[in-house]
Amino acid sequence: MRDHKLFQIRDLGDDIYFIVDRSTVGMYLVIGMQKAALIDCGTGIGDLKECVETITDKPVQLLATHGHVDHIGGACNYDRIYINEKDTALMRESIVPEKRLEFGEFVRSINNDQSWTVKDLVENRELHVVNVEPGDVFELGGRTLTAVDMAGHTKGSMGYFDDRTGTLFAGDGCNNSTFLFGEEATEISQYKKTLLRVKEQLGENYKRHAICHDYSFVPMECIDNVIECCDTILNGNADADSFSNAYEAIGIRTEFLAWAKAGGADRVDKKFGNIAYDTKRIN
Ligand SMILES: [Zn+2]
Image 1: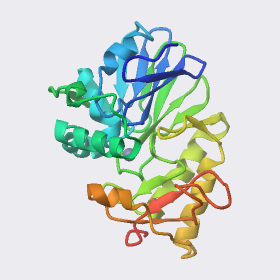
Image 2: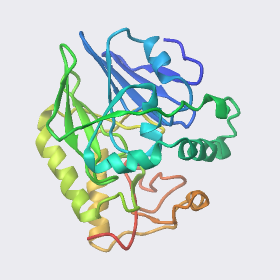
Image 3: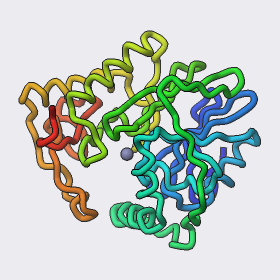
């Protein structure tokens, strides 16, 4: 599989493709016998639809995990987007070209990527927004994706569970640096309940955990390690450390990590799974 212009494409097997855009966020193309689903759509730099059409000629449904700019910015490539209604306002705020450019430039300032210009920003157009509720099933032909409530990172965060491979596409809902700050996030106590419910719901069918930043598939213990982070914070035992000042530059206030870090969001104990949280919004 060849990369396409501003997108890197990785074939993960089982008719799943990981596409990474210039803002370094990853999205997933999951292909069934009749249809395909695109889970998230990047920041909207470059023609994602054209890229996807180099991989599949099946009709594509666009499913959003949440309303952050780097996950829904490319929606203007498509006519319709499925997203939970709790994140619709966040999506509408984020999708404007100024926000997408701001985020793209923020990433460029970190990695000095000169491969794209403002001309590559996808133009905005009217979108048909469809609400997704937990339990909604998307039939792709020979495989289904089921929406899973992952409220925490944002109140309307959704994961999508692939019955063919046992993969939970978790968006930013549970990863090595789960952001749980800002008005759009839930309190830690509610987030912990979310993760326990996800585990209970999916049970033994849950075999793989896929995220969107820096990695695709990650160790399955990620979810247990993040639940452990929740407990550590809730018990008042978090060894909070100042979080990256890079985010202050774009107006996100400095927050704290749940665990001592060993560089980036990595933990000193080498376990995979962490939380950046707002010390004022725990319970
Ligand atoms: Zn996010």
